[in-house]
Amino acid sequence: MAHEEHEHHVPAAAAHSPEGRVFEFSTPERAQEALELAFDYRGDITLILVDGRRVEGYLFDRREDDAGNLFVRLMTTDTGQKQSVPARDIRKLAFTGRDTALGKSWETWVRHYAQRLAEEKAEAPKGS
Image (cartoon, rainbow, N blue to C red; front, side, top):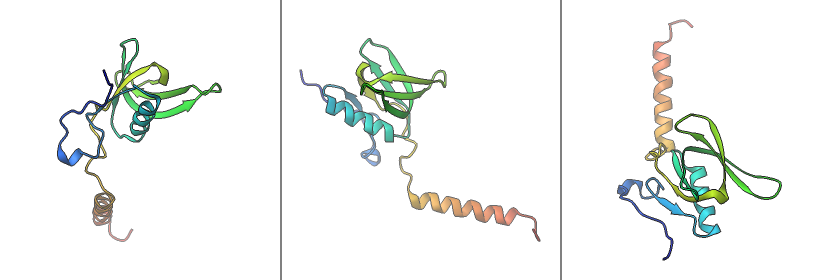
């Protein structure tokens, strides 16, 4: 049985986002691809470990130890604690949280920032 990415229903606007996708770590290349996407993702992920446990949270770091073993670090959803997970212990990675960057753009950010500055200026006391 071939291991491949499982697609879930994803709205067309979100087609470029990994939100809702699940990656099986069937090859080292597949694992690397999933971890790179997860590192850049602005939402929570769920790791399904080889022993069946699940770890859900925001992936904020990845490191190699002196022996070259890769670890990912998450801020867990349930406790808010930082947790380190050896990449070799991960069987699947699911993009389960909402992609908070979806639909955002530089132009939208600039427009909101300019609007906020204008509102702050309008609210500032005169003569200050």
